[in-house]
Length: 502
Ligand SMILES: Cc1cc2nc3c(=O)[nH]c(=O)nc-3n(C[C@H](O)[C@H](O)[C@H](O)COP(=O)(O)OP(=O)(O)OC[C@H]3O[C@@H](n4cnc5c(N)ncnc54)[C@H](O)[C@@H]3O)c2cc1C
Image 1 (cartoon, protein in one colour):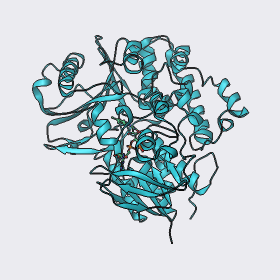
Image 2 (spheres, rainbow, N blue to C red; image 1 turned 90 degrees about the vertical axis):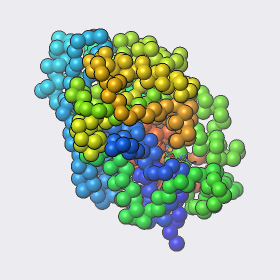
Image 3 (tube, protein in one colour; image 1 turned 90 degrees about the horizontal axis):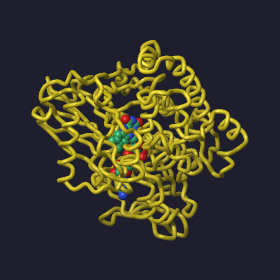
Image 4 (spheres, rainbow, N blue to C red; image 1 turned 30 degrees about the horizontal axis):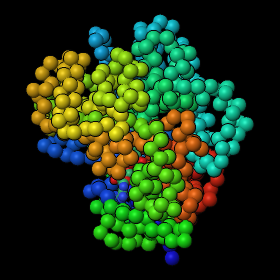
């Protein structure tokens, strides 16, 4: 008899776990409350536009390749990946300039020199260190399960850590290399991928610049959802069953052991192993009986949450040649903007924002001659977002786009508009506090300090996804699946797996 693994949620952590366990010989059932698998990487189509609802940057191709290889697959058999050129465009508010970053030093160093004379050589040095640290992270940290503080703060780590000054914050680390705010912002913006601020994130995460500048930014033709479809296809090929409209009401615990789940509506599903890919705090507070919880509500409320997001999905009549695929607008007062998100929650007055225009690369996602725009403004979690507030803020952001991007008639050309914000993250994904990404990557929420992927009070209950290690992002959540798998089979290695046990 095969052991039955029940997985709550079909985000990257859930689907990744399903793939690995099914290939390793488990009977696997994935239970997803929504109408489609993919979690935050959901998709919807309306009036000829197809909108990826969440992630849009395909980063860390090496991690996807590793995962597919572990499954006996090749990325190119599932996805048509295009390297974006430029990787992204930056608009500085009230300044008559835009710059393009190509993830190609031959092109990027002259841009840095133009922004800050002398910074080209420092960029090279910065990236050399980041590349080294990325390599160390992959070999020793990212693929490692943590059981005690000693796993993290062993001598080797401490020596390595202080030599690389990875425990100072990103803001001071970046300032050691670059003096101009315009350049500092380029080196720090990548922290938004981690739902973090440069003022509270350890410099450890400067590896993001290696990912950004040296590895490049990719796009799977058809959209990010193609990646979700590939994972579902692979999981199903190995026998996993992915059920949608399957809302788990509680995890069944008997004598300290997880024995299955109960769905809303009363259906009970027995399991030898339960993995929750749903939000960690939600799982703890809503799906478990009190005595089985890892922590109490006070603890979860005291965590630093990543930002939520104010998102507009826009269908635009006509093309928008001012944009490239990924576009960033940086706020003038960087510190104030981060403070409005993390310290002093309020609707940002002069926000940084992100605009994705996938139709520039992909004719499949918009009708002919039209543009598909995804506009995202990071905002504080738990912010109140009544519909009237969304309309007002949307108008403010659209005006800002017209001015900064110099598209005077953008608003007149909108033929489709949909908002997604704090309450939607809560409702659609059961996200604690309506955070878009989960727990921020502060030092005290990294590695051993991040919620662990095994429940200490309930045997056979594990976790995968952004809430546990290593953390936020599609490729990172696939690593979380590998970590859950390692836990289950008792593999204590610290690097990527080369094969699965049957
Ligand atoms: C707007 C946005 C932009 C992003 N951009 C990028 C990007 O460009 N690149 C990148 O790599 N990452 C990006 N990310 C981050 C990335 O999308 C996430 O870190 C990752 O997808 C999270 O995966 P997960 O495994 O944690 O599961 P989630 O995606 O959180 O999925 C969890 C699933 O569990 C389900 N669930 C919850 N409760 C229950 C229940 N009771 N019963 C059944 N099912 C339940 C939910 O419906 C959901 O489908 C972005 C995220 C957002 C929101």
